[in-house]
Length: 155
Image 1 (cartoon, rainbow, N blue to C red):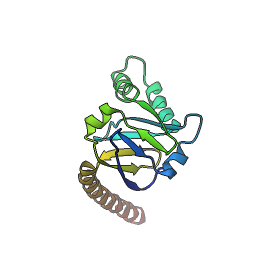
Image 2 (cartoon, rainbow, N blue to C red; image 1 turned 45 degrees about the vertical axis):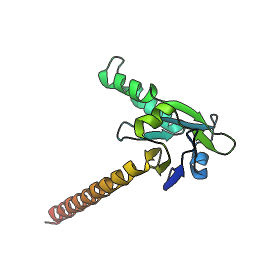
Image 3 (cartoon, helix red, strand yellow; image 1 turned 120 degrees about the vertical axis):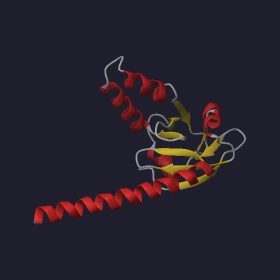
Image 4 (spheres, rainbow, N blue to C red; image 1 turned 180 degrees about the vertical axis):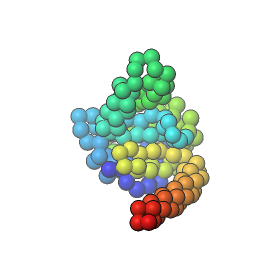
């Protein structure tokens, strides 16, 4: 699993060192990661072959010509780059993605279990604050629903 959050410096050639634990998660026939513009946030999403297979599976479930399938094909497959590790464990981010998400100096690499995201540092700070609030409210709502269900079952 991709876990934790790391701040990394993007060098002048748009390279970042991928955390060792992340590199271990993507070991396989292709020594690198798949990256593309995230669908859910303004950042780069990445992962190994299992993430690629997961998105391919979702796309294949949809009928050819389905507008959602077409949107996923363009957004994920059309925006995807295979990025190989160099001998120092770095990947070179595509210029287009760096420009699209304002990645120029320091970036944040965030592990999300089966995938990771690469963010502009300032944008991630704002995103994290919003996500913490959503998580707090969501857990509170879930707990209230669980208590209500227990009371209903007991009563």
